[in-house]
Length: 268
Image (cartoon, rainbow, N blue to C red; front, side, top):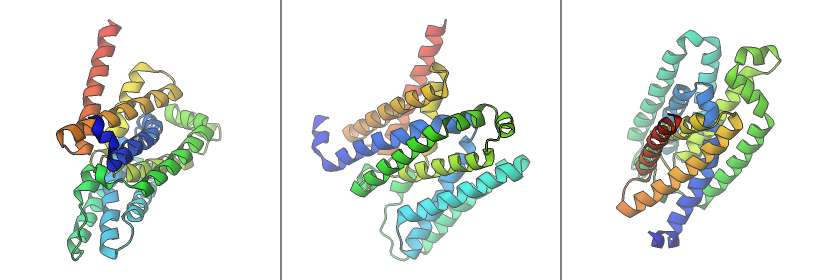
């Protein structure tokens, strides 16, 4: 196992795992508290349309994914506020159309040689130095924004009506949070893939909610759990020659179940 630490691609994967865990740990509890899991899933799957567009028009896949994620987050945020009673239907449409568009554009792309499975399910081989700088920069942005809007996010999470009455711009915060989710999805797709990134956003947050009461405490605990799950998952993937994304998610699932049972036992 220790020989893996000497491999440059594995070193990049470990650093990327820690960096993306910070964003996931901070954004995940806010996503769960605001019941945005389905919205986040819609954004993640719609992002595949940007991947297909990038292949078809021959430009940066990261830029295409980011553009698609931002468009999806804007549409979902607008629909959630203007047509709340039809939000689930609209999100499902955005989800399906984004995936379908990505598949069609990929089919129409002549002679593409990109491993699309690395975007759907993640690949440690896909992480390079440029990705690490993007992740580090995004972490800094997330820390600054979450710190600056912490109390506004807390009000939005637990009582949005009261927050609106107090002058908090809830619609703007809602869109900002979905935008952060969108960019987290784009950067995490290299590691765990678009299909499974939502599981990583939710499982550490679910566990942290059972052990910590404050929103800040949930974020800190979620960051630590995310780092643990990702690093263990990467070592498991290397040791048994498995998919990195699937290994991370299974480790996170086992960890979530173990913490749930632990809480039940000690609560008695």
